[in-house]
Length: 410
Image 1 (cartoon, rainbow, N blue to C red):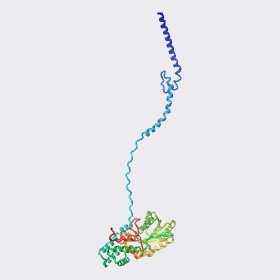
Image 2 (cartoon, rainbow, N blue to C red; image 1 turned 30 degrees about the vertical axis):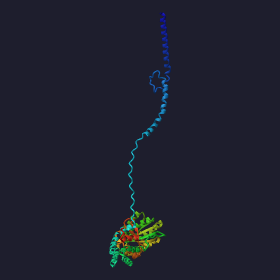
Image 3 (cartoon, helix red, strand yellow; image 1 turned 90 degrees about the vertical axis):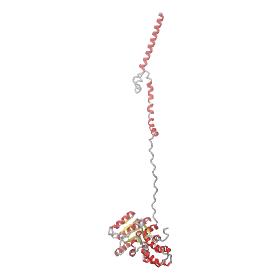
């Protein structure tokens, strides 16, 4: 019994010693190992009261924390990818533009024949009605020829031209239906006798003198002539030699601005000859092709003014060449135009006529009278107010428009 008690006591002592040693060993590492690692690294992440077994974890934590800043930079690169993958919705396409309207082609300029036909409506009516009545009779007797004569004179063909035409027609032994075409042929024969082209100088500035009575459309005709020359590629200078009227100088200046050409002008009342001299000098110095001189509008009965016109021509010919002396005639004046042409022709040797206001006259035959009685050709015809409304005279087109014959409408 005593032995058993001693055995349990011994075992208890051994157990106590064993537990004591174990406790002693467990406390000794805590005091020696924990102080070094705790202060430097685990402070940011480990809480101050970590469990005893936490010390091994702090050494592993820093290696995991260091890669984080290295991998962070790629993150911004992902932002553009997101923008690319999710772009804002594109705005709706604008509606298609409406189709352009078809180009409007400029209206074609009517032919010379058509424009003559429009301008000679009144003359054509007067002459055509009489001829139509004569041809409808079935015979050309003496009474019929008298009516033909009256119709021609009323159209201002002139007495001399009418007599010559009737004599030729009578000799042909015509049938009534042949009268219209035969009359056309006679008129074309009279009008087509002379050269009606405009002439130019080969050695110096070309000078065109333009004369006429006030109110005939002289200044406007000068503008039309200048434009015609421009379309042919020629250079032009205008000379305002109508110094008696300030309004005439201003009017010509307005046309010059519209045409884009230079104009030589002096003060109102200045010597017209001085204006012409300066204009020719200007053209000579700058190689201008044509000088167009606007002379003072004057009555053909004023002797002093006609003498001045002769002086202007002499001055122009000192350094230039006067190739044209053009007379502007108003078609509505009828036979009075013959007297004007005759007087001006004596002063400046008129080379051609520009006929104006033909569209408002029933006296288109004045063209024939001027040619037959004076031998002065009509070179151009004004048939409107615009600068393009000047036509070179075409005898056949003019006569076809003046004399109506059966079958024209077809």
